[in-house]
Length: 31
Image (tube, rainbow, N blue to C red; front, top):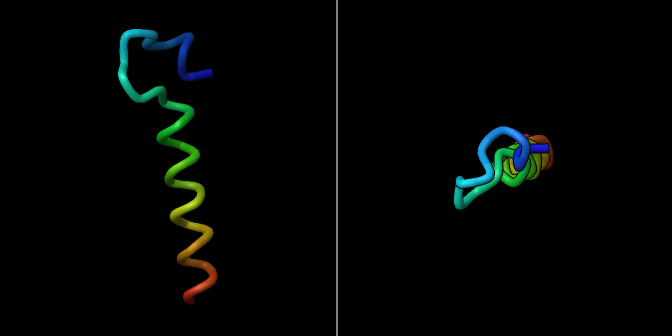
């Protein structure tokens, strides 16, 4: 989905969202 917004970006928005999602999942495991 991120490719439709900024195809020139080296890191698509979708990849950033996936990274944050995984990060929050780790926080839930710790907390």
